[in-house]
Image 1 (cartoon, rainbow, N blue to C red):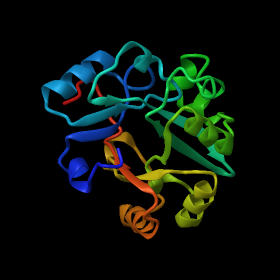
Image 2: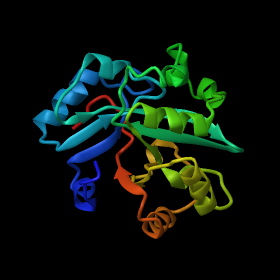
Image 3: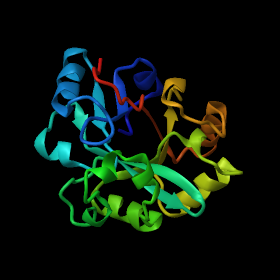
Image 4: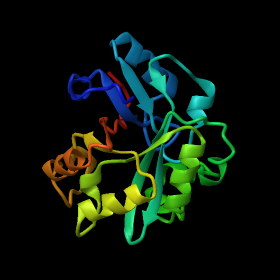
Length: 203
């Protein structure tokens, strides 16, 4: 992942933020993977909410393991993406969903009580990296301060290339330019991107 460039994301052939019907998406995991291969994707990651069940059934050279964790960090509800994880690693088990509702119900996910420092530690123990998803969405007076606090706990990257689509009713508290400025200021942070796909047909 560290070899990926901005052009890889802007070209549309790398998408590291995809959801399927293993969580709150509509598409079948296998069909997403098949369509990605058919359409010449270089790399994808399917990042269902709080579950890695799909990755236990399907593997491919263009697919990297991923999951999107719902958690509170202080007063801010955030989403942490984990990539390149060993999905069977015991450190991750306490943080994964125990029921289907924990993967798809917005209200239920809001009650998540995952400890972020412990979660990031578990992601690292499972061989992965921790990335802050769609940073412009978080209700934080200072986004940079939020990112810096997360970096102290081992945050590896932030999602810079993200469409913030209005049709998904995503609320922005900051701008995409704010996110890019922070990413550029802290070059040790990996820049990632994806569409946050939740639809029926991935192409």
